Length: 332
Length: 271
Image (tube, rainbow over all chains, first blue to last red; front, side):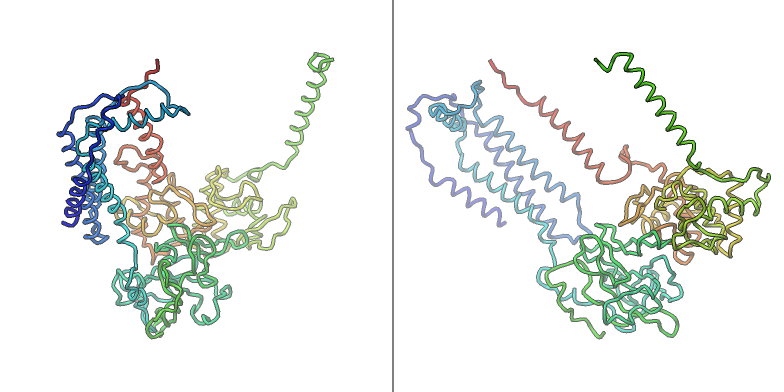
């Protein structure tokens, strides 16, 4: 509705300020005068209005649907339709509204008379159009609508205002670590030279802060940051599985068979190859990640199962403006 | 006096011939690369043959009786050997590394990695070596997977969960930081099962609690299916994803559009 109102404003503006000068009618014309073609002009206006509707449709679909259920085909139809209608309008303008004349001269260099003639040709080519300002207004509106549609993905930028949910994790002291089937992970099940995915018991599966990647390393090789002395019982380490670069799941693990000639173990993200060193508590050793992988302190309970001994060392997830500030996590 | 006259050229020719003969002589004088074998082998695979082959081909890096060499020492022929111990790796590892051609290293100074070489041992020699390495200490035996019992779509899901991060969705391989990841076409079921359980070189290993034998059958079935994926679009373009797909846009679709423009447009006629 709003767009339609603005369109009407533009149309009415176009009717004002129309001045006809007869001065140029007296000079000799280069391009022959073309007969008006109101049918073609109407077609152009219809096509541009359709383009505005398609662009508005794109904006509506993008804003209405949540990301998991986004109907991509509707987005494609909307954007493609908008572009096709603008293209069609330009086609009609070119074929039926602009008076064309084939000339064989090269572009004039320094001769001012010839330059003036070129300007005159361009001006006279549009002489067939009777509602020039209306068409220009409609074209501007269509281009503007397309531009707004192109900016629509800004809706997905987040977090915009409410960063509270990013402050919360399901981990507390004593929360059990479970696998994807909900079975607690026992410390004896965690072997060397491989990696496991863990979840917080009781947390919903969509909670990004619940995902862990768990590895076991030789405790003698650990160089954890100060304050994390007891965070890796028996050399078992747990880190957030969400990469601190752009939020992909860290699904790659590189481990040496023969340490003499092969590099140390590393957790690697498949998206942009951010590489994290488990020995030093998740520091970045390669790749675009801007901060270390948050580590979760572990303890082994009386049944031999893994439990959290506190909350993460830092906020999880990709970077945003407050990611390095101290999170207000729950009881640690 | 031009050097191209025959009486000058013949000396050049003599020099070139002498040079070639000298190079051939030097090449023949190098120690031969390849397998060292006993002059007469028994007809059947045996532990004794395995021990002899090990001593001649493997002990330089893997040490006497599989003890491993971790501080580089000069061995026979002044060769710097360095290799992990083989005690307890079992028949499974020996069978895998030998049949894949990973071991023995073609060039003793080259970095070990998942690079397959031509297998120079005969079948009898491989069985003997596997027997010998298995005897060095208790270790896992050779797995016997059955991919026919696997489920292809479950295999796709499991492969995507556990393997595709490094090996690519269609097992075409790729890179991880500091590691080369090989493609998995042309592997036998046994080699795939062995690799999953061993975790060779920089690859992690997956135990039965992580990937059960039934799950492994499904994964193997999927990996062998990737030899001939059903390319729905009609053209797989190498099955490696967005880069060749983008090249189709740049090198095929855009030239076609430009050609269409040539036909649609009007030529400027110059008088």
